[in-house]
Length: 83
Length: 294
Image (cartoon, rainbow over all chains, first blue to last red; front, side, top):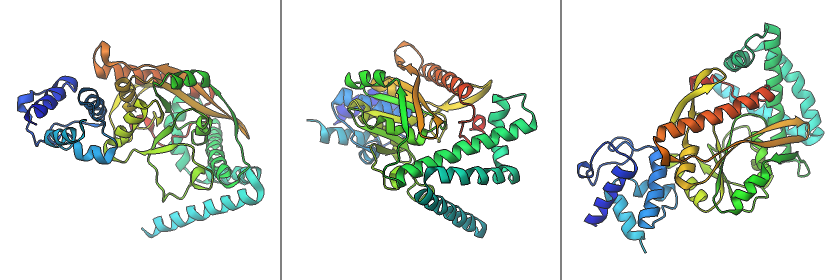
């Protein structure tokens, strides 16, 4: 799980071009709004990258709302849905 | 508050009156009454003149006051007819708006290749009824919209006609972008309105000689899923004939540089296509607010 969270943080910094480092992201920091400040355009990239890198599809906005709360919740979601 | 309730009740009764008129006298009878109603409304109310001034002053900079009044009347008639048409289609099972779709073969090629497509529309022409042209596509069609089921004015699919498309609620989490990504990845078609900024990210570009902010969600969806964007606008040609036409096709691509620059490039192409449209159909513009201030 720890490796998965690090992978997610690397993905956020690299693919979403965040102006921070993976090490500076807290596991429970909110991804959207206050926190990392991601917006709906970032959500598009995140949905695509999670599918591409981890083979997991976020099915709808209800699942997305739970999964995209923080790095921790996204890691939990990916771990639960990976084949 | 009391005034607002009264206004809502009046609006509701007005719609019921038109529904009754359409059921009894059909589309023509409703049009006939509309001409009279709009004539009175345009004569006594300053509101539509104020709302359309930002557009008309840019589209027709040298208009005389009388020409400006006539242009407002013309646009109000067009908007009224569009609202009647969508009610007519919903209320009368045999009602049909005939139409052509210039660009359908291109769209079919894209859909058959499994790439999915974003169709970017605008609040012009017959956008509310134009989606009927897409019912025969060999894939699912989604429209991103704020669907207010309590609104007084009903869509044709709320008045009895079968709905041939799925609605993605833009008021949901992240503006429905997750559902839109999944639809495009499945090879389906997603319709988005490209002219109004509804709180999402925008970029600045020029439209009719002035700076305007346009939404960019559609280009982001396309860049991330590899789907093309078809800029398509519809227009009413006569009482029962509408045309949906693809005015430009884009393939947004983040691979060659800055994302913001790419989004701005796409928005500029959309703006140019919309300028061409309003040059050809100046009185089918239905943004009743200052779109340059959005």
